[in-house]
Image 1 (spheres, rainbow, N blue to C red):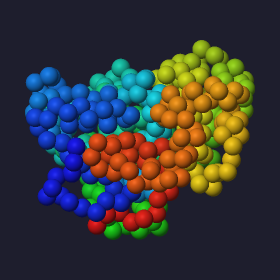
Image 2 (image 1 turned 135 degrees about the vertical axis):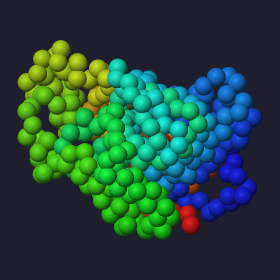
Image 3 (image 1 turned 120 degrees about the vertical axis):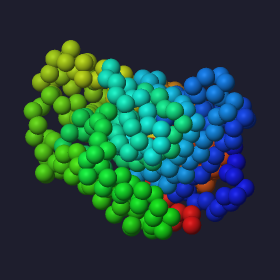
Image 4 (image 1 turned 180 degrees about the vertical axis):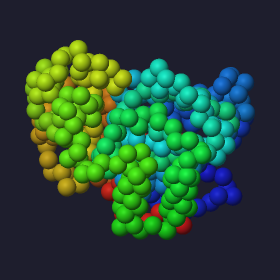
Length: 361
């Protein structure tokens, strides 16, 4: 997959751009493979694969990713397996200018029409079935939204009607953000990211006092409360269902029910530990820290088990990942062509958000 010759551009680590042409089976397979960290994707039929075409231009604005894309009809699924191997802890917001989709979220089905905005929690299961479409998608880290939105768990599958004036304002903001992205410098990126989160909160239910309000909700009644406790205690080797039940004052059955959409509480804890380890490994400020020390800080008691789990989740060992990061392979490779979607995945995992060079003109 190569960028169209007519779109020759200077790429930077803050931008990806690619398209695939109809009739090329290899390009379709590469596109589908590239999507696999985020979604299980396929065309509507074997025949449809032969005429499939798609394209995207995406920007990484510090903590926020925004993608303008178009595609032939397709089905996108975030399954328990996709979630487990992806380690992506973000909320997405999408608006279709053409096409729409049939949306299934944990047993609930709805139709999303052009002009309507909808949210998805990328740590939970979902299925999108779309005809040919054009869309704009904004992807924000949970930690950024948590400072502004009172009920993050309630966003999954939420649709903002096209008739709402607030919908129009938010969609217009997304379009402007994508248009202005090439001109933003690093401070502007951070300002845009936090301003966007605050704008979303104004439309979906703001937290009047940030994280404190969420922390004051009834203990054990919120999945978000459980997530926060897990993140705060990932270093604790004893972190598991028993300790969570004790700290939250909930039964084991209730805890399991809350985490069932996320693949189970033990699986979720493992994902969070591996995600934290990933971010420490690629962080240049921790370049001198031993891998065994990182494993311990992330709650792993056995370095061999940690290395196996890390390789399974991220496709390479911690040492290999560190060497790749130090050689700038993660920042400069695969920004177009076959690896562009893998670059988007790494944006969502964190390391590319540290890049400070300006986006492509």
